[in-house]
Every structure is written in C-alpha cells, then in structure tokens.
Amino acid sequence: MDGELFPRERTEIAPGAVHVPDWLPPGRQRELLDACRAWARPPAGLRTVRTPGGGTMTARQVCLGLHWYPYGYARTAVDGDGAPVKPMPGWLAELGREAVTAAYESAPYDAAPYDIALINFYDGDARMGMHRDAEEKSGAPVVSVSLGDACVFRFGNTASRGRPYQDVLLRSGDLFVFGGPARLAYHGVPKVLPGTAPPGLGLTGRLNITLRVGGLGTPPG
Image (cartoon, rainbow, N blue to C red; front, side, top):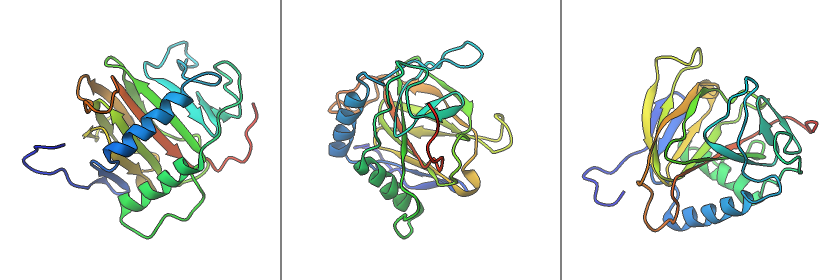
C-alpha cells in the first residue's frame, strides 16, 4: 500500500506457506474482478453454501472447472441450480502457475495445471471457519488471491482447528500459497475489514480466488 513506512515483504508463514504482498498489480486486479462478476451470473452462478448440518456459510461462492459442495466435487451445481459448472479458463490456470513460481521463488511450476477455482465473496459480516482443503487428490499447492477489502487470514496447523496458528493481514492483490507440509493445514477468515478496498477497484467487500489441482478425473454429478 502506498505511503507505508516499511514496505511489506514476502514472508514464509510456515514451511510451505508463503505470503506475497501486493503480488497482483491494480490493472490485473480490475481484470480479475470483471471476470469474477461474469462468473457470478447464472447459470451455476454465485450461491449460498449450505452445510450438511443445516447451517449456511456466510461467504457466498461460485466454482469453475468442478463444483465444490460439502464435501466433494461434481460437474454440475448440485447444491445450486443444477447447471453445468463453468469451465476453468486457461489464463486463470496460468495465473496459478505464476503464483506458485512467485511464492516459492523457484523454476516455473510445471506440474498438473490448475483445474478448479473456488471464488468466495465476503461482505463485511462474513466469516470462514477453520477448515482444510482436503477433497482433492492432488498435493499441488493451493493458491489464494485476494481482491477488495482486507481480511484477517488465520493459518493454523495440520492437526487441529486450534492453536498454534498465525493471523496474517491479506490486502487486495495479496497472494498466499500453501503446499508441501502445509498443504492440509487448517485455515479460515475470522474477520473482514470493511472499507479497506482500494478506491479505484470498485468493489465493496472481499473476493478470494482459490485455485486448486483436483487430480480427480471426472467426478459424478
């Protein structure tokens, strides 16, 4: 963010978990936001996710490539309007490859391409409880890009939802990648900070674009 006394730097939060501040420049943030708005429209658009216990997630979601529902994947929006899920764009899969290369500061990522995107929209009151991204068969790193309002991102351990964990402030354009020993760590969003989005972005609330490699073949549904 402009005007800060000390620039934010790339930080390894835990082995395999890396925060890269200000990774996505403003122009690409606006392009990604425009794409998210198109994906959120029906069919298979933005929906409220209901849990098996009868509760609802406060963050609303749309999926690309494969449709995530608690707790599996399908080809159609099985807990929404039943329409076929929108395809995963090649340029978004490439963004995932770029993100892993940037986070790990290594040779370009050349494993299986990213084929699933989960896009969560948070208003000022939305939260995300501690959970693991465990429905995939691939161990490829999870890529998370933030747009809009800042949030407190809680990154924990692989054994339980409790401590130890670290709270990381994620702002618009920030990248967070977790793989290797951190791939199945619990994580969540206990707080969104309303009114902190860049004025020029044109977004009220927060969007989180999470990219994954499924390794699932062709799920039913």
